[in-house]
Length: 393
Length: 145
Ligand SMILES: [Zn+2]
Image (cartoon, rainbow over all chains, first blue to last red; front, side):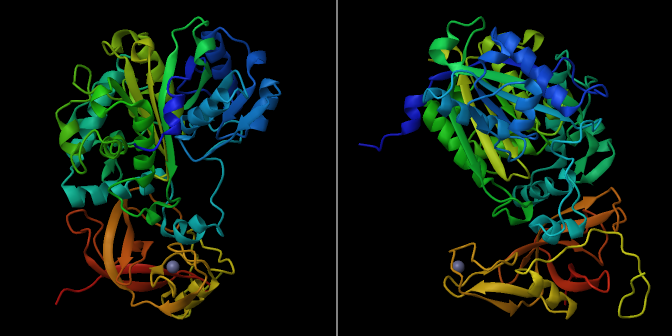
């Protein structure tokens, strides 16, 4: 008899019951990072039909949960500030699930807000320098490794060398994602682009050109979670948590054991699929964090949608575009919709909308089971959520 | 205004490392043009960056040794944005030393051109004396015989 998997008992035990962005996203010179959190929290709670006083579990990253709790004026009895990069909010879905399922809390609020473009509010990721006596300050920063474009790109080069992956294939990810963005009312970039446009855009850090890099925006996002029984009594169709996973590996990308695969993602994805009891072929819609064009390609491999080295060929023919057989990043992604810094929250919001069937023009037909997944830092961490609507239980 | 030992005056604007007690021997070694790395006596593996407990087996029976300074390019990128101390385009690379460990570095003495640069190309260390106090380990291609 195989050993029991304690995660299996948690399948479907909790649900996402509210999800929203801040009032507006993109360029918000009128709002600090904390206000973006607060707007999103207010909107997500309204979506759920709940109030801030109902929240007894507070989860956030970028800012601390005490900064946020003070701003929102609440006294939660459970808090989690896991902050391992952009996937932190996906990981916090797992943590909220555990606290909800244990009965410690009844309503979990997970928020994100970042003034990535306008840099207002003085807190949040990106506002902290690298201390010169930290490992990064001693062993990476002295070589001009400033910012994600110079760091997130290193695995792409190795993947190109090892598997023959091309810039054209990466460019196709940007092209397909832009087609989805054209159908999202809040997306920043909607003009159609071609592979040639992407390759001809300004070089940022080879192998990446500008259109292969995520946007830099101001945005907030939030979700609300409850146990499944309570969720069924609320106003929106519950989006059930079927499987979750998380993992961490290195911190500095130079310490990544094999740049052609993320151990963190493999640990995270395996846990989520085993808990959900579904296979890759059961996934109707995928929201895979696209900090750069190559980022979701590696996720496709590490999550088992394709074999190692095959993601380039997989995305090359527009398979992930609207009308393709593998709808991916249906909100337009970090490449074209929004990317305030820690984008993972927006994979959760879009997955919720798709599984509720409320994504409008960009709705994937018959989307019953979907996945949200992202790395944190430079493939340092990973978080995975497999969720489904009532048809998936 | 700092000056290097060859007498040239420099105003280095790039980020400088600030050693901690555990990493000081590494930076001291660079100033003497020696690449000092640690090896674990318990599991036999060399590792980088410096720390007193082996990241492979958690033994604290580790010692410093002088690495050959030879290795291969594991991966690289070409940054097109100038930064303090770095005029674009410049090459950021991860080099795998012949002894095993990998380290972040810059490739110098080669065109920053993806048609010229290759993963797995052999490289050797260059000691870049950026200030009087700090020497950084950079790498250049090994001339093919
Ligand atoms: Zn050891």
